[in-house]
Image (cartoon, rainbow, N blue to C red; front, top):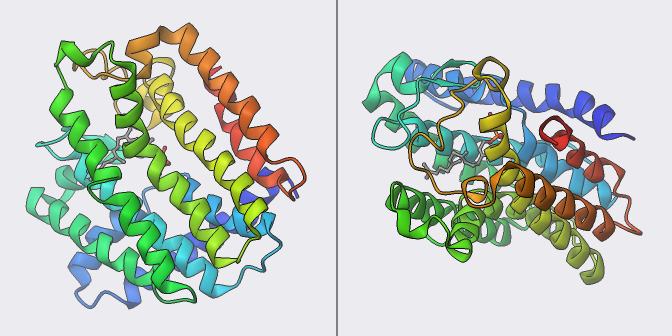
Length: 288
Ligand code: GRG
């Protein structure tokens, strides 16, 4: 199966599960509506698809239990986007082509919707087999030594010229903010499917390259795409004094770095049933 076929098959299944269960498992209709607004705003479902594609690479069958875990990851990702867009953080009006949560519903409502999505995501991830191991992986990936830690470094270093050429700092910040959650999607799937240690190692190498490359891609989207194409404000990073790989290396070298990571990621899949996973890297073509 190709990546496109895989995406076409599973995206509607993920979307349907999210819609149905955000309606049936959240008692208060209004908070359910606010949560659903952002979750169903049209994200690419990259992280749930990555979890499912890793299961597929390990020949693990996908049924409702696996979909629930995949959707739990998307809830957590959506929480991070809602909070990232708040006035106290990036102060964005548009996300996924729609008004951001705080613009649509108010700031307190957006904070609470994010607060509600995080534990609900963990609950969904914890509801299948290997729950203790999966919960450990996801909570470490999004906590102070993962995504929140990266977001803190980002906020703390904005408009701080002294880190602008500190490659180690920028790599670490980007890895924590973006890479950790991507790695966790693959690691959770490998743990869930009880992958043999050599296969797990290959998959984690792929996930490291993919996690690192995804932030460079996202930074390139900021300069290459119009806001209509991206569904959010673009050309903001430089204006707002953000420090990232792009501001460090410039467009040409960032693209070279991305190409190198793609090649390395492809190589790491040798011998696995990894066509679908390799297809995730095609996403980058639009910024190369
Ligand atoms: C607020 C705790 C907290 C964390 C925020 C996700 C994040 C951390 C910040 C968003 C800003 C950003 C550019 C982060 C890099 C991760 C990233 C590329 C997010 C966008 O994910 P996509 O491209 O978006 O998968 P969709 O909308 O398709 O799900």
